[in-house]
Length: 152
Length: 152
Image (cartoon, rainbow over all chains, first blue to last red; front, side, top):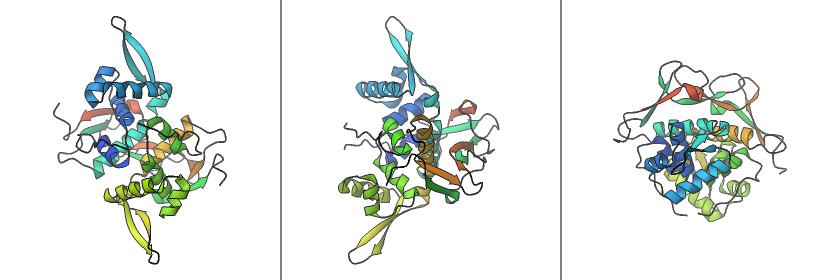
């Protein structure tokens, strides 16, 4: 399978993707979380072929991640808005950012700062326990087969 | 690009990947976080072609995610151990699990339960602020260009 290298892009998500995957889709989502909604904006930001972008956006609409909405009639133009399911992909994107910032830093520092409006600080996201709220350490997690586990 | 559908696998990570990507690599990491270290164990768990698995593992070694270590001499056998950088990919995997559990549930419930040993509860991971520790809500995050942002 052919792969494009994203290692040179000034984006920690992209740098992480260079390690763990092949994901125009996640780069589209990254842009969506930064406020991009329109086809041409995605295209300009990503430098992605228009037919590939069309296919990816269409797939995300079919999967319930984006809602496609017409914002102009003549000529017809559409925007792509994150649904509830789409917004909940945010922790995946922010985890990719955090890892890339730490393990694939560019020479100049993070390309993107996330400021937490509640406390006012630039931050990265950490995983916390949904039950007790404490920050999770990998060694404290005990995986167990759940009710939907495969028979073997 | 040809894609395999992972939607039918009893794994929320795989179900999430069916939406957002094409990632044997992340499935390998999922298994590594569940304790898998040996080539044959990965191969059996994933049902992946051996040459593809070899290439993916080798790539992850080159990227500093796994350390390759010989555990048997005759015949020579190797295991793949997560490095520090590899262990810090955990939030990505756990975010994929959380999303898949919620938005692509199987009929029987989660295939995998994560129990937090500290509090004793089955949980999912939530994103928390590294500065104040509070659980993050997307609407409270203000992205800003960082020092490593691209000139345009």
